[in-house]
Image (cartoon, rainbow, N blue to C red; front, side):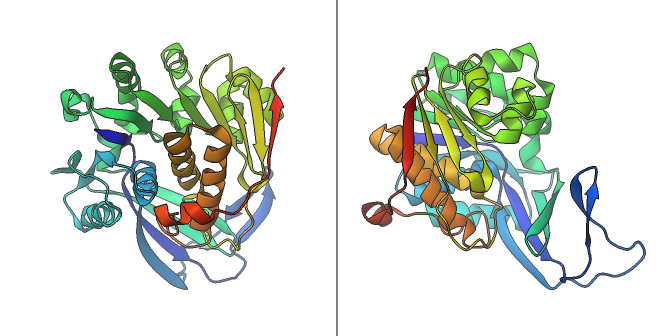
Length: 327
């Protein structure tokens, strides 16, 4: 019996740090852009390699806290795939459901940064093409939870299949749908959101899903409760998190640390939050674990570094959480 089986991306993350020159131009359609001179060679100050991907990141975050976790997905039969297997083993994640694709390479994310700004370039790979024929449903029914990380490309087709299978087997489901899934926003997708036990979104995703740009997070939460009857978690970057459980709303600020890299912030929060529910079935405790786990993670470079471990649960810092009745 597993505590959680995670599904989603498994990538090689390559960090490229550009020299602090005028590579950024702002005020174009109210957005910032990297601008590089065409035809020139641009020297890179630093390059680092890590494994990443929402499916493996959350799996490792949970395993670091002592839970029995498996990751279900695909990598390429290449050096990048080997790195992912090594990290799963290091954290104690069961990799029996992680397969090597003979034809597709491991997906790669290029995290290009200059100072505090960054852009992520994604090269699609094996994890984005997980098909129903790759899923051995009879072998994944012995788990308490499924965690569905953001899905892309063909893997999106598995979203309703996994949710409906989970409901048939009394498995609880947490999901963090990708912006690709949300933008499709068809009736089938919405009907399956209603079956989810914990829905993770950032504020931008929540606004797109509800078709309500510029709306405050409290109103977004009320709209989402009409779509999903489970716990709704809306993260807001450095402005903290707001959680709705149908009766109460919980608000908490971030835990302040020196930020090194925000790449795994959402995944480390989701892993901590899930751990809190598994350990104590308490939303306030889940928020506390999520915030601290995310803070520790972004204080180091790499989406899987800095995770809380089981021993640290005894010495967690205090987080101020405001709880109010929804109505």
